[in-house]
Image (cartoon, rainbow, N blue to C red; front, top):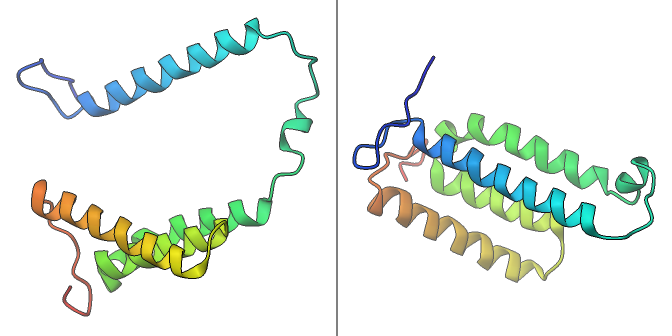
Length: 129
């Protein structure tokens, strides 16, 4: 299915994905050029993954997989706060109360942006909020 990007004065539904792809592609080119100009000893490709904490990666992916299923049931506010608190907890780089306050702030700001500024209808869930 073709989603046109539209014009400058009348953007189409494909504009955002197109611009996102252009920006990510530009960053990739910049990284490729800067890394090829640096004189570093080359290692093996498996050395890149050494030391990776796979349990954290799997837990984050699992939570992102569950998020869209929990969203219509629990509602935007509760589900997003839970996802943010869980994600910040998995990263575990700050105190628990900082993680909770950060999750609350992220959820609140995203709610204000999406609901009030952009007018997006967000799922209310079983509790009505």
